[in-house]
Image (cartoon, rainbow, N blue to C red; front, side, top):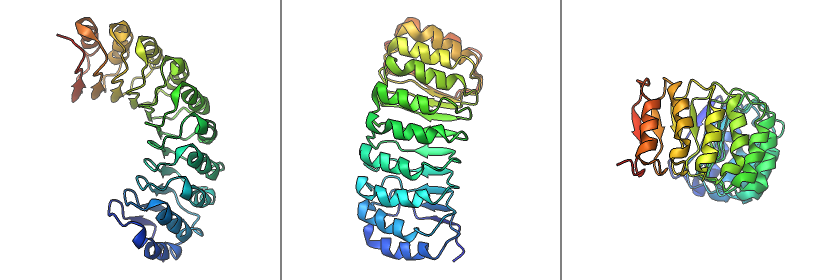
Length: 294
């Protein structure tokens, strides 16, 4: 009854084993970290797990990612979250929550203010849930890592998320990739970047930024000097944005990985990028593929 950490991730336990696991959880009230990601729990299994931890109030970390829990289990998960005010890390990526499920989860953590990591990626939460997610972000000023990739946020949703982050200044990693945020949301995202000088990893691939959006993002990074990874893949930034991107690269000597494939850089743009990297000596990976650099 004194367990503080349980990790049964990636064991395909499925719903069939959840009654037994829940029984164990129910008499371990000191539990702090629970990891059950990638177990094919489905909604029914997640509900049973939630019942097992209904009296646990010391959780600092919960990982139920990649279990297809869907909106159906969101109320039960939210009830658990609601009573765990010490929660610091929440991972619920790839669970088919949709907007309705994400809104319920957000309500469950409306009183939590110590979150340092949130991952709700690949849940198709859309713009519809962005206001609720933003409210959670707004009160979690210690937030360091935010993952919301592949959620169909669109520009309007990304702008709401940025609003929720307007007072955040401890962000080290942001992933808003594959949300079609476009240039329309680039100013707002850039504003967030500008007051997070500790930022180390930025992932914005597949967002249709175009040159205009990429230039704005680069402006937001002009005071960042701790970046180790940048991914602006598949944004059609073209040569037009490469001067600004190169300027960012030039003052990030710790940079290790740079991803710029599928951006129509052409030879002229690639040359500018290379110039920006001439004093960077820690690179382990550069991807400039599919840019017709000749």
